[in-house]
Image 1 (cartoon, rainbow, N blue to C red):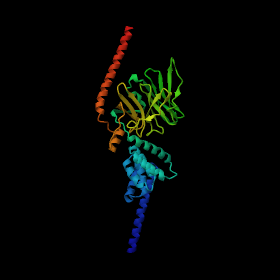
Image 2: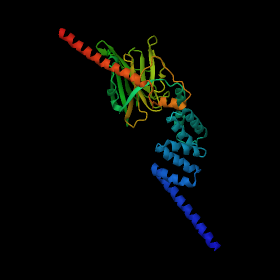
Image 3: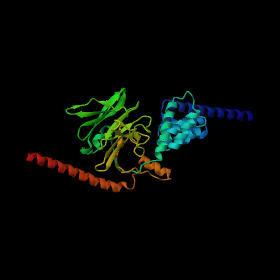
Image 4: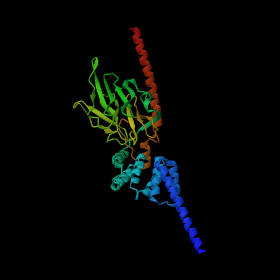
Length: 381
């Protein structure tokens, strides 16, 4: 009898082990095929029996990460981090997108201190660490800006969707292929007097900024703006009415996200542009922030970002430019992050929106009056 029970127990253990192994192999097969949703469910079942298993937690976390279930991914990467240092790389990416830059710096630093030399993510981790360090600095200097509203449009229709005052000049947008399999915007800005242009052109697969001047009936030779162009992409130029202040976007080393918006000024005494300055948050983000347009006449501005948008879409934010930069002072980190992310417009936005709407109505009326005046003058001639 005892022998029979022993045999039965052995068969039961063998059967359980076989089912477990089969389930693990199935989960791994789904994972290798990048079928992350069924793989996640398979690993979840296995974790019920082995909740502290590093291998299971790590692979479950990757599935959740790929499915953008970041809270679940964070929980299980933390459990797997001791055995799988690469978990800290993924945690750094999660924290970075959540504007938890200090946490991202800690996680990425831990990863780079314990990485496997064969990891292919080392270079990406080093670059992301620099961006996270920049993000932490920018988060401490978020500008208090009244965001009026936003509209989501196709990225290819950005310029047509911004009601640019003709007194500010004109913008032209087109799509080009700077490199095989790559599509990007080519932007041309022309001043109101049509005597100067700034535009982007591809150079060795990257976008650079150029300018040209009107000389009587001809244009000067195109000049590369060497003070601003880098090994990365520089694009989306817009010149302020003062003829000195230039906004543009770059995705180089000083960018926190993909593209960030920068500002520079032309120094006529040296015939050079000043060192470009990243305009910071909330205008820039861990995503792509493309263009800044400021109408000083009517005190309104627009900037373009693909944050939280599906591929091919961007949000155009309309805001009230500050006469002087005002930094948000608060000890509430969550509130600061929310303002930096522009998830909630500021309390003054609605009031400023009414003021700006009145300005727009005045602008349209003024344009109509100018048009009628031109007709009257033409008739009199």
